[in-house]
Length: 421
Image (cartoon, rainbow, N blue to C red; front, top):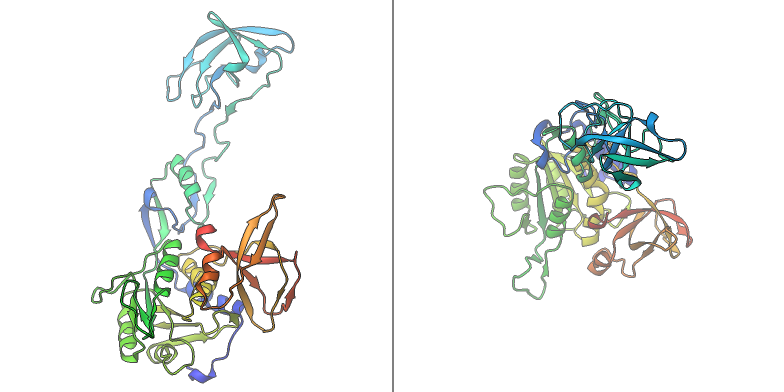
């Protein structure tokens, strides 16, 4: 184990890859959940179609099912209406040449039919329909298996069950899914100066914002913060003063009951920054300090079987490091592939200049212009302790280490803030 002083800042890319390697090795076990509780979960096994979708040839429109050989090349044809078939009608039916069947959307196609002409394009005369030339053979028919054939791969292991996928899974008859378990996560904030919103302020106190930000970011990631049974808190996180004994006790207790501990504050090199010392004492530090701004004093380690992410205490630093490193880690623990998503690009609305050798994350507003292009512009207030900038922003501009200046119009990577992603 290296001494605390031996740790040197590493690149953001190295930090992300180190985290992912550890998290993939600690991937959660699988469990089965009902479809109604599967949204946001990650599949733990490939999912294949158990039957054709559609399961039978059926009508895509309300109209008349017929044999395309009866369609006229010119003029009109007259076909006898042999009956009516509704969706859900399983009774076998057949039409002969010169006949048609009145049919509703979703109803099985009768034997002998291969085309449906919509009702608005025919003329009904007593027990017959008159169809003009120009109709296409095979139109308005959904063929069995044209969406999925039995045995087709529907979703792969590592893909997420999104709200837009659930309906398709239900249509294929899936009532339960095998998914990776969600990790149990606890949040700790530290700092003598922090009080809870609603409490009486003092001359040197500020309200705790990071605990609420982290709990909200965790919920946006599909997870809930857990508190140890023996500890009470008016919020979903635990707040502690800068007291090494209290922090040590909480870390030891949580490491026995959760998979992930996220802390905020107390991770730099100041006199009251106890977390690097305590993590080294209780477990192992994988790395400490990342070449990024804001968020350099970030620590990743483990205590017992729990992973620990120690985030810096400035509000924007907390949010940036969570999105860059903690969120992908939580996805990797749940088996997501890929855990580290490719960031979209946008055009830069104004010049950016930086003088340091760190990756930088600028608070920004992103918008789609009238021509359909995506543009992003940094907000005015960029201090890592300033709340207004992050409250006004809907994105972070990601400026790589090696870049010193970006002209207006340049393409830049952006990270959309969760609620607007």
